[in-house]
Length: 447
Image (cartoon, rainbow, N blue to C red):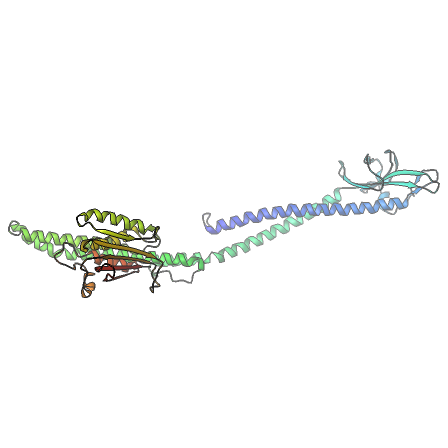
């Protein structure tokens, strides 16, 4: 597994979280077990204290008498680990068990009668002190402190065994969980591997687009990639076609120019005509090749800003006509298209409107108002108060080189570029007579 892979990063992250969790669980469980073991030992020592109390006898003289044999055999075995002591309240030792030969423990200074105190001494022994006031039949009263202590080794051994067992199980459980996590990661990331394989198949030419049954979260990505692939292929195809058309279209003008070169002064008008024709061909082919079509993988552009910039430029170009622009565009109007494509569409439509209008041009943009066209979310309309275009000519002027009026200067390729570009973007271009201004109205529907 590669270090840079997403699976490795996720598995490493999960491993670190599991390690931290198990470490915390180990500490908490070990501490809980230690406290439980100490509580069990305290209860055991409490039982031993009660056994010493039951075996002790206070004589009429006030002396404490302990029998030679005790209920607990460990008290009689030296070094057994269980030791008993009895002190007077003033810290005077009056009895110690045979197991405690050579040992001495000082009871707490302040210990009220009837109370117990459980301690871990500096010598590594757990000790329980119990203070009592004893009064015999003769009325003699004494205050004693019964002490039972046991080596901490027993608790330590229990905790050590529990720690080893716990860590072993936690380690095994951690490894099992890591393998499960790895399996889940491979299963969860399988859709990514599938889409990568499909992309490799597209690169090798075995597929034309992403057509797998992908996870819901990847459907948007697959759609954008398919749109990008389609757009790039269409773009490449346009370049190829444009270059082929350009080469083919220039053959005739070049042949004429070659023939006119021998007598240039005589054929001056023919040379000019062919140069103009070649300029027309080059301009059209370059515009068509540069059209990029729909690119939803790009960023957003503000259509309101584009429209206003075009309007300001056209005001200067047609300053002699004193055109009145009526621009209705919501601000902002954010759309997902290439800025150059939008400039090409809106610029050609508005330029044509300015060229043919008498005095008024109206531009309107609507967003998310489908109005019966459910596949479109952007509507751009351009109206003018010019003579308009006959219905029978609407289809013709969308072809290359065809102009509505041959007497008006132009190349006849502006509307052809708009029509082709709108089609590439998955939109629709529609023209009719303007209901408001009486001239031409062009409507561009974009998805």
